[in-house]
Length: 358
Image 1 (cartoon, rainbow, N blue to C red):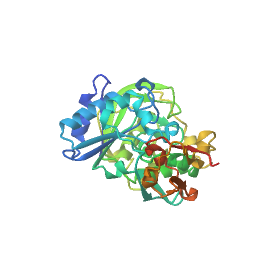
Image 2 (cartoon, helix red, strand yellow):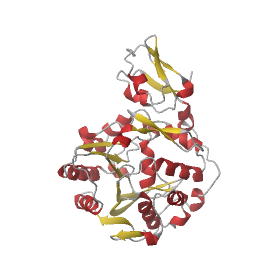
Image 3 (cartoon, one colour):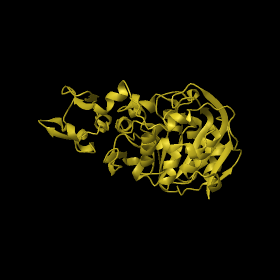
């Protein structure tokens, strides 16, 4: 039987709840490489309720150190405003100050993996995610306009660096398609443990909603489907009506059925929780994205020759091999470009920017 732990907590006193999560779902961390995958989609402050609260990250890092973890890294591939500027999402925030020298730019290196050809033949996943012995996901308790809930399953979308996420938004324009695609991303590397920041939750039409609700809860599980199903019920959804959960269960990632989940702790529905309506989650009609989201998948690297010193780093880190060197400067084979922004992330002289071709 799958298990979900719910513990009362506050940001002033979350260490006990984090310790209980690690004790309830033991992960072998001594001498091993651990990646803490937070939700850092923008450079915002904790009270805005958008990103993982730094107090939870601090408590987790302290406990992992006490447990003799070999190597700990903290990272995420943030949202659209920070494509190619991964570091900026951390260094300008309290979350980044807590991560300190454990921060790892997940956009620097990626590895190609086969994907569902209904969307795209392959995706590039952060190498640090795939190389970690243990992945601990620390999402927020949030709503999401397209899939209803943005917790364990959705947090794995941040394992993909750069504008691949925008590209997949376009290739999965309908909510039903988007839910299927998220499940395909999640199964590439499910986390070993999920600890959810449900102390200050987001309701309304997330994941950027200004409607916040203080719940004073920390949730944990080693199964993302069971955890998200529990969150869905707390929000007032019937998991059987949430496509994201139906597709995840059908993919063998876990069960959302109540009889298959043991909930330990103070579970109860949240009164009058504001959430996206079910009809918005079950539509097969495409949603047209405008502005930067529409343009980003078509962006390509552009080189400033006055800054480039021909170091070759961009060509060496380019996952699809779209960049080669010619006459001392990077040359792009546009048909191979993802774009994943790895070249921009890695250029030591900031000679590469991303923009529309021409």
